[in-house]
Length: 147
Image (spheres, rainbow, N blue to C red):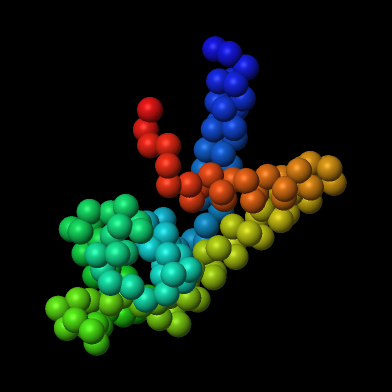
């Protein structure tokens, strides 16, 4: 394994470990991670057709149907017919869905803020903050499929 492979593997291990820890810091009784991801997509992008939401979340239509049904029953989203095409369903976040998303993200953000203050030096915090923009750039990069 060359140095570039070791560096990439170290970044991957760190991101996966931090992701696992952040998933563990969720509120008791919170919606599933798939549900939170869907709510987050709706919060970022606004109401959208079910087909587009499936693409955004990389879900099969049948998986999206089950997830949407549960979220609608919980009052976290609403479905309505498109004005432009009555055959199309538009999915939108409700106020209750916004609150559930904020609670979930808030709990994880609070843990991260405490952990950063307790475990990292000022220089490490600055480095991590600078790396956040690069990590988002990678997260939303559309090229470079599986090798």
